[in-house]
Length: 246
Length: 284
Ligand SMILES: Nc1ncnc2c1ncn2[C@@H]1O[C@H](COP(=O)(O)OP(=O)(O)OP(=O)(O)O)[C@@H](O)[C@H]1O
Ligand SMILES: [Mg+2]
Image 1 (cartoon, rainbow over the protein chains, first blue to last red):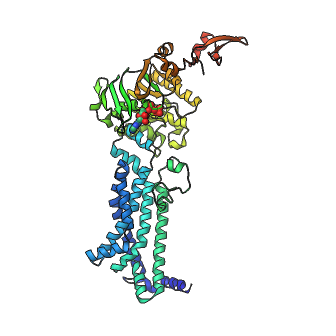
Image 2 (tube, chains in turn red, cyan):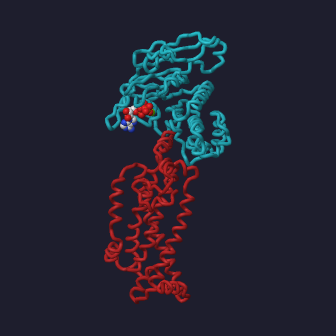
Image 3 (cartoon, rainbow over the protein chains, first blue to last red):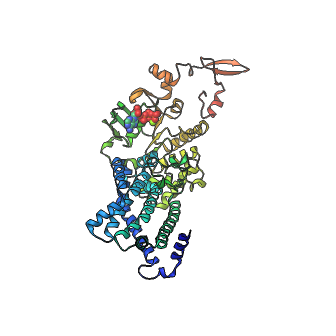
């Protein structure tokens, strides 16, 4: 408890809010890093996920690849890439983008797959082109699950981004590594608490966004949701991804 | 006019869904394809708008081979009503009806105005326009489906068991509505059902199918009822069970129609009263 109080004191100490190594700078670095890594991952994963979801092809490959990517220990990957590209932010960006790809990919294609086939069939049979089906039917109806995937990716990245400080003078992880070195456990715990607060904040934002992106008229129309409106995850999905899509 | 010439369809898994099917579907008339489940009705219907391409044979619409037409364009010119309405759940009723006109580049305002008047056509209240499909009853959804099918003012309207999912009372209502619409619009309607009553009620031409889309008999409802081609047809239309062969018995002061099993089929009424009733065939 004493340590916890010390950590709070550390967080509240105005001295820790100034200079290039202060809490505000580290927070912004951390958040910015998370946003960039998740965006990069989305840029890669979303088109592939949409394509897999639309064509129904390549799913096995995606699952295998995602599984493989998930199995890579991030710290090991980070070290490996750092040895290759050198000290700095390059390695953490690579490692954490790779970390963020599987949940986003899964969110993108399961979002499409969860759509009632008769809806897509009817869109096609009234004369929508494949591009129109994707744009006006699959993307809006699949968006909630995609956002859920991005949410899951963001949480993983924001937590794991502390590792960026392992190879760069960067982010909230700095407090953990610095505290570890100097045995300043208040600083370590304070840094961890800040990471948690940031994660909670992002969770809050995503909860709001997820509500916004559920298309009107859909809540009761989705077959998978229609029956058990409880938190029954869609098949093959990480429960974390489906959570909160109501 | 739609013409099937020796059309077969074998699916990649080997199922021969349609085997050497030839038929002419006259313009401005309703052709009903009727047969039991798996007889290839849906497959035949979906070959007309190229949702399914035949393995062999040709289909012509007004003399043009549809294999040469671009599927997306072809589909936009043909109305299609599906069994479970197939409405887009994230679009309002009005936007669902206006879907195809908008795809064809009709200005938004015009498309919506026309969609509203189509709601009148199919007997839906305009106040439902802003609702989402899941806020409608099954019967209302079917009506929206019909309105959507009519939205491009197509010459051809394909209907795949459109009234299968609603209760008998609503179904009867929708059937009457369709008869009224068809007398006004005169589309070339291809209607799929497994209900022989519905087939006889709606069809100018009725096609009774066996498995593999093999035609058991083609003709007007009265032809088929009067002269079933074989035992299969007779059994399908219920003639063998004596359901259609009725005789009159005098009971309690009125003439009662009774089938060969002795079950009551209806009451005999004076011809003038019968004319006033739109559906004058004996109920089951
Ligand atoms: N995509 C497909 N792949 C393989 N077989 C199919 C496919 N679609 C239909 N079939 C098969 O073709 C046959 C005819 O199917 P179809 O859907 O045309 O029947 P139907 O007469 O419409 O039946 P129902 O009244 O049940 O709707 C069935 O044996 C069915 O299993
Ligand atoms: Mg069918």
